[in-house]
Length: 384
Image (cartoon, rainbow, N blue to C red; front, top):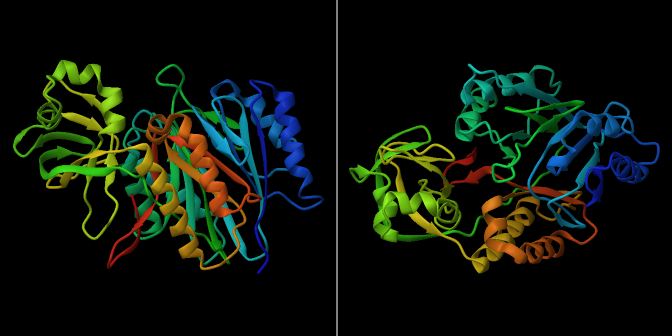
């Protein structure tokens, strides 16, 4: 079977459409006269305007464009808070694809947004085999779990979804989504792929559980009201010996280093739920749903555990591919890991390059939320 052809362009230059045109054309040259079937684009915030996409589109002959602006981008060539990373792909015969975009109106819930995106992706998808969907949403879609549930209503509970929620600049700038020549906020878009497609997914975060398991006794969607019958904030007050006001002052630090870990029966990895805010009634608003009755733990991460998780995720990819040669690698990495790793983030990139091969095109971003399928003992493929 022919491989997917892949080429990347990367630049740290800030806000220059001339530089964008240069790296797109440089990546395009690797294809010769061949057709580009998809462009994935991640940029810093200063490039989030329509001129960017018009410049890229002018070199691609109508190929779909997916991506977003973001706080931190990465590629085989480095990690940067400024510039652009672009991945160009050409699919061999036998691989089908379709892209779609849904913009969230004021009355649209994340659940309905996911439902509409799933329906749009399969509407013009001309292949009996559906293998994988890659999706992006922005940070204004606060409950990513509902977005996934909506897509699963259309694509199936065990259909593998991977993707990312873009990050803002710690509140200073909102991220933008890129879809073809459109720049927008508050929505989601993606691609569905099928046919003769081989892919591997590695999912590890490196946070470890602390203390004894606790039980969520009252919650709704991504709001945790009570843990073990007490106001949810007590979970953190007891551990850190802080009152609520002190916790609020330290929230950005605590949320990164000590998220809530949600245990799933049969899974090795805990789902991490970072705290978005502490409400006046002592409830916690978190990133992602926490079902009532869930078993949770306080989690802790270290640089060493995060780098070990990187190696484990790479091993998962290789195991799933079973010797199939890798064409390219997408990396959806938590912004919490970037904050925790600090300068060691570059060490992680070296681990990734060594793991997949230094000539393999790599592109990615540090996100406010990642979605991917986990593998339970008796159930395979459900995305969280």
